[in-house]
Image 1 (cartoon, rainbow, N blue to C red):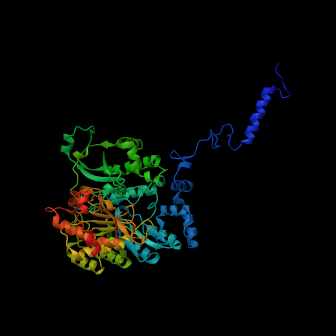
Image 2 (tube, rainbow, N blue to C red):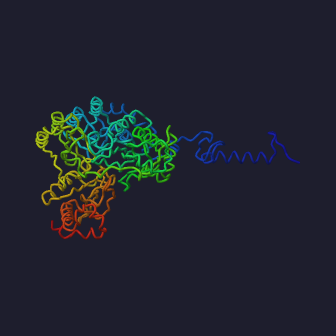
Length: 594
């Protein structure tokens, strides 16, 4: 017979319930409530994510963006300006959404990075940038490898004035840093280059403004680069971008001879879409088989960016560029997902049935060149992209007096003044030389590029700008080259100076010496190039002291001149030799003696 107590339960049931409740109370912290998972979250509540990634799995930068959009930190910029105070903690990252970089410990100040569509500036804007550098900066500005302008040494108290001045000039720095679409670049001679297929400046500007006007295109998994190549003679390094739009021509013959599914394809100028250029990771952009009309480039790029936003890696910064999403998916799935966001079909057409542009003029951004309108443009060498305020004002005066009141920036840290009539060329040249700059195409020094270096960047392991200038001066005093070469000095693995596409590339590296301390040094790569000379440079020497660089490069170039085959460029010379053969070109004892 079963015994029933006053509660109505049997003895066995009462014993079980008491044991369960006792165990639950003793282990309250480890035993979940009903309806909760092992972490104490209620299972009926949807876990919060960022585009499918759980909040707890986000990397540091993604958590910062999730907590507060970087575009919304202007109040902090104003408040910190009142106390001349630098941002703290997460706001250091958010300031970059406004183009303000706190570059401590290299410099306890801000660097301003502008956003200049296609690298085109009016002289009014160029003078305004000079005024910012004079009033709130160090009295100079730097041209970058994205046809952009950076101004350093800005104090917190001056940040609002700087941003307002930019707006007054018709410029902005919004989205020029952090995980955003960076400055949209374009062939610097577009619109007046006799060899180009199409003027791409209207499309670069349209892309620029589309990005600015759409808030959802900020806060990507990582930065994103877009470039337009008009098919002209001057390179814009479009194949180093996440999206490179390359102008091509489709003829009636190619349409007739290709059994295409595109029934209404008309002859004319189109763009090939190249994807996933990221030379710091040793990869060029690859043609993905898509042919676009010029007007289609903006919606297609926007759709692809949104696919990247929704599906890019937000847990590992090293795998968060577009390249890694496409590596996982392949081109077909990437294009299928892009297609879902478009109202028109993506047009597939083989690259081999398109007429591609002529080879690039390696240093066509320097010197005097004819324009389509019978006038001329003059390309000016600004050594490692650095200009004083006085030089900036003088160049603006030259562009007003002799040109069409416009200045074009290049991705080679130089600038171009267009619209100069034949009868004013000599006067313009005289005025340029009076600034201390030069228009002449010097095969050794005309292609030297350097990032900010350790003088202004906490990541850099070498003082690149100063060492680059010294290297150029040394080589120019020792030899004459009959063919141009490019020398790229970058301070760290981020490769802001794109060392992998240089004939000679150098990446900063601390080198240990006998007493155990370290000095500036470089790893050296050889044989890089882009466009029709596309190649990733190969590493030949590691940990070369900066004090040995001048002698090593001098010896290398002298050996090239002595051993090259007829008309062989330096790039071709280095590419046909093995790493061991290249290393054997240098006598290390001569470096020590030098």
